[in-house]
Length: 211
Image (cartoon, rainbow, N blue to C red; front, side, top):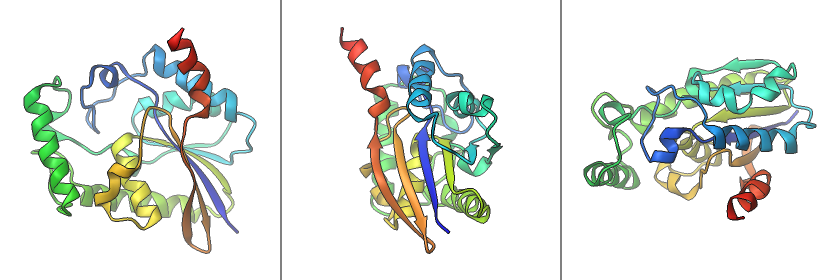
């Protein structure tokens, strides 16, 4: 029996808007835009017969799918879905120095150094371990055929690499704006991405922003 995952990133927070890195250690709320994005996603997908909702332990993911949870769907938090921890850089203002340091770290990852990380933070290799545990947990619930997963940008990109069999150095190939959707099917223990960076639910919001 197969399984289909609807994997979305959480809605916008004020720190997203300001370009400040949140990471696993920053537990911020959605802002007005984020709540509107969450509502738009709910309105488009509320009639799908989801069997379960999985989120990270951080409230910006809970808040994004809150309407689904309030409708009575079973909900489980998995710490394995938490965002990558950026350590000493979490919550710091965006600056030329910060951007340069982040570029250097991302270049290390792109060159295949998956153990590189900031002081007090996590590496892609470490995040991959807990992501794999989360995926195995979701897979083990055989009766849950249609599943909604809400998580975070960097962790989501790493997860999509893992599921599609791509090296983690390809994480940049997965766009990840707030509430973007990736649909992934599981059949015969093989994951296939069937919908890539779907933002159909945001079209009306984007049009309003242009008026």
